[in-house]
Amino acid sequence: MIGETIALVVALLWTSGALFGELAGKRLGALPLNVIRMVLSLLMLGAALWFMAGHPYPYLADGPTWLWMTLSGLMGFGFGDYCLFSSYVLIGSRFSQLFMTLASPFAALTAWLMLGERMSPLATLGMTITIVGIGMSVLGKAPTEEHPGRIAVKLPLRGFVFGIGAALGQGVGLVLSKVGLEHYTAAVADAALTPLLMPVGGTMIRTLAGLACFSFFLIIKRKVHRLREAAHDGRGMTYALLTTFLGPALGVSLSLLALQYTQAGIAQTIMSLVPILIIWPSRLIFKTRVTAMEVVGAVIAVLGVTLFFV
Image 1 (cartoon, rainbow, N blue to C red):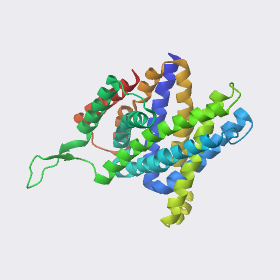
Image 2 (image 1 turned 60 degrees about the vertical axis):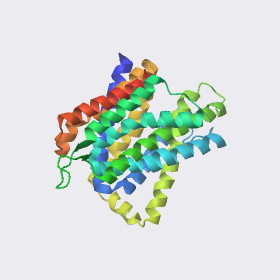
Image 3 (image 1 turned 180 degrees about the vertical axis):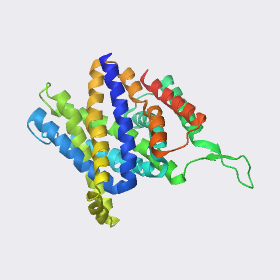
Image 4 (image 1 turned 60 degrees about the horizontal axis):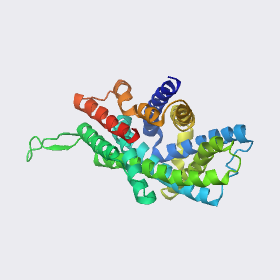
């Protein structure tokens, strides 16, 4: 039960990180928050690498590893995390995490297109069930004079698009990371160092790419002053630190530990419970109204995700 317990702790950490991310995003803005998150992540990852390997950077990574991990960082962090934290501001962490259940279908489709990996019938069924579950949560009656009882998306269009974009960025970024990790494994001659260096070193390269991307957009949008303002927002910076520590640092590290003590499918299923676990605290903190159909939809979406790991 050790692995299952750790996986449940990870789900709770990621739920807390999403809630703090919504609080931070609403105070600091998506771009400044992501720059701060990337800087904090780099400091934490550098400290971890220094402790494990004696170097605060991925010194054994070769050119192909840097290339694929950079592409993964631009897609997963630069695009995906910007969409995710923008969706936190527009539709809240509860619906944003619900959309993130689409990351597994997007990853499966990308692996099929890029790597020729076949999707099993269960994965295809899981994709369908996940989409149905999300639809049950976000669709509802939006009556108008012309169309009384009309069914429409209950969320702002931009929030809906950002939610889809967040899942797309994470799913595609995951596949690009897989390619990068294969090159990283080949580059690290010492087999004993491989399981230690790959996750942390690869994440650091992705984070550097994300930081460069966010900084570039912050400059061209002439919002650098927002970064200075954010640095003076004590509560916002506290939320940013917590969402960074609970997510990329502690959460991801424990997720890798969970995989060592239980089967990947079991661990991933438990860690996918975030859209369900977040419902009650989101209602408590943000006073959001939750319908029975939204809860049922979230449960169905998570059940669909579990089929990818059976």
